[in-house]
Image (tube, rainbow, N blue to C red):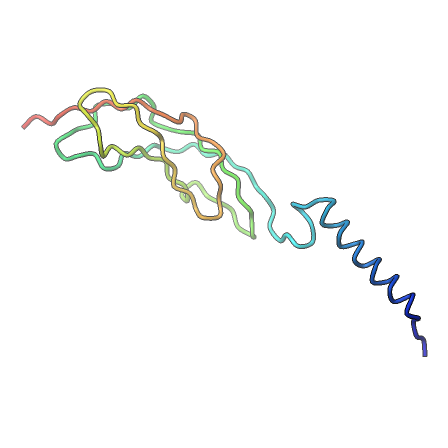
Length: 129
């Protein structure tokens, strides 16, 4: 039978460890241990209005749509436009022009890279009864 000496066993083990470390250090985002692949995507979304008080009405918004840029790790799936929501929260508004942040709802696997525009001007007025 073929048998390895103690020195040969150490050399094989050292070679195996070196290959693993080389793979890890060479390309940390696409090595053997990372099953997903990073993806980046941009979406053009309609901006929703949320929490507008009942005694106010929306007159206008400076922009109706926003470009949302995200990245995510793909585990055999993609993020669709329907998975992402852009909205402005009008909970605390005054009559007239209000500068509001465009807020984004994302799936848990995604990371927000940017929103354009980040702020919009929303004009509201009191409802006439």
